[in-house]
Amino acid sequence: MGFYTNKKILITGATGTIGQHLVRQILKDEPAVIRIFSRDEHKQFEMQQALHEYSRSLRFLIGDVRDLNRLTRAMKDIDYVFHLAAMKHVPACEYNPFEAVQTNVIGTQNVIQAAMENDVTKVLFTSTDKAVTPTNTYGATKLTAERLISAAEFQKGPRSTQFTAVRFGNVMGSRGSVIPLLKGQIIERKTVTVTNMNMTRYMMTPHQAISLLLTANEQTLGGEVFVLKMPIVRLSDLVEVMIEEISEKYKISGSIGIEEIGLRPGEKMDEQLMTPDEQDKMFELDYMYIIPPLYSSSNEHYRPIRTTVFEKNPFAPNIMIEKEVLRSWLINERLI
Image (tube, rainbow, N blue to C red; front, side, top):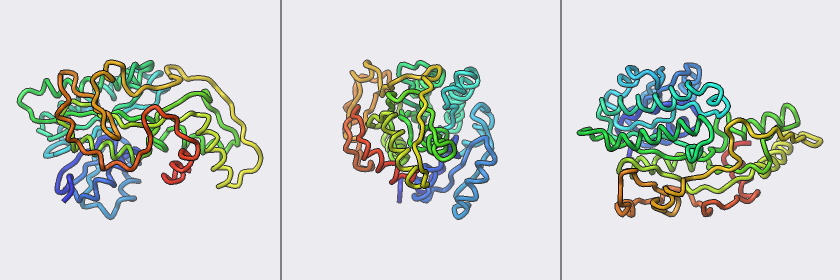
């Protein structure tokens, strides 16, 4: 039996890239049901067709995290909630800041409230490294949501629900991210637009992202932020590898142009995994960090946490990934 065998799970934003990977992984444990909660009926239809052999274990619910009543009904009898739904594109959040607040902040509070009303066992929230000293609306709303999750753990009264967050870097190949964008530009235009070739980002594979989610949900004691140790990718290396591999695969002759267009509003040249204050109190494991709850004075009880579920990761944090390793990740994850 697996951790999710015969359990009932609800995943908000489950039709996104990470959501679909997570659903497939949890299905291996033969859960009683996974409720797919999202607002895009077309994506739900496509996912339903792709996973038709699991129809007895999946339920597709149209809904928005902004709607507390719908969330409350959807969480009836649920054991575990994975809260993935978000507005995540930096320019869209900058141009529509209150929309980002309604989805990322109010939506998260709605998830918290609905989970407590239904006595859900655990709620896991997916955050981002952009929540660390944020310079844009997206990061600011995710930081606020992180704090809501942490505060919920200590303001829940007699409720037993555990609230936890994980902090992601850039997930390679996720919908709307740089890798599918570059691929399309190379094939269609034979030129790519980049913000700044010296920009760096923490990156993780979808497999690593799911491992972090599942480990955090299984091992949480409530109120923590789990952060995977990730290598740094320089944008220039990613662009060069993408051009080389896509050109070879699609038989594109001639040179591919590169146009630097500058940072978008709110963007950073470099990201951080945690603040200096968080570094002072975090607990380090082989493959991840655990930032204890805001109101916790000890992290000794985290020592027994296992990290063997992670794939072998040879990277220390803050190490620039080599181009050939980056190339192997892109190929092995079938992103090109």
